[in-house]
Image (cartoon, rainbow, N blue to C red; front, side, top):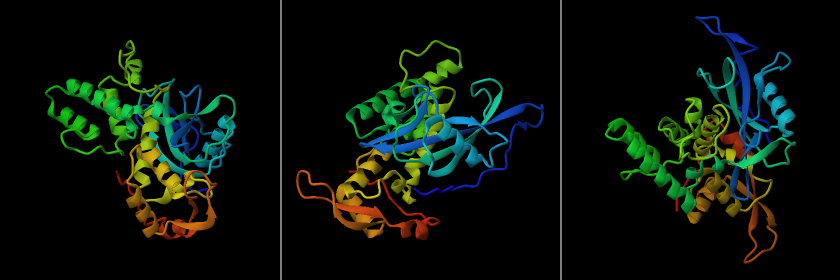
Length: 316
């Protein structure tokens, strides 16, 4: 797996004094490590799925990314390959004592056995409405949209946000709006973290599994980024084995996007853009005709890393 940093680390070290009141902020490095297995997108977690791998920036770390890699491997046993900076979270009252600035990273991996205390979790446990491949996911999205419409009432701006986020009023479902949907649910009190953060009793209806602090928000940010990125950059191959069938590639894209793809159009697009090459081998014999095995053309990464390679989500 390639060892790629898509953005340079910002020059932060140790603890930083915030201007104005002399408040000292703790700098935390946090990783959203994504893999795909059996058509399921997975996220690497700790503490029974409630925390993402994270740790403070320390003086022994040569850089932010070096510190991140050290913390993730120490906590999960999983060495990081592809890594890119995601977002910096610095809002007040994010949980825990004092002010914490969290510099988050998106990492793409292949599933491996983690250390005790760490585990891969299906990311749809946290966002079940995002899996539009299943009748259950679509039904939950519709139920949430109905509750949000009641919450929005006669406020035009709120109703428009609900319509855009959940594809109502003739608008399409936009798979990239993972974070926007989660934040809307939080604002409406339909995310369990909202009641927790306000020190209120848990809601009678809470969507998806909660995480500690604002880690579910960070995960939603990473999911939105990855869903958008697979459309213009060949990062999907970081989630694939060395050789794969086109059907396996399509199912991996579907797992991340949470939508079904049109098989003939998908294959024509992949082949026309010269993203892959045949290995000369076929997959182990199963039912029907053996499928050809492909591999990612390394030249694609070198030639198109800056301009991007389109891998559009073509719905059925």
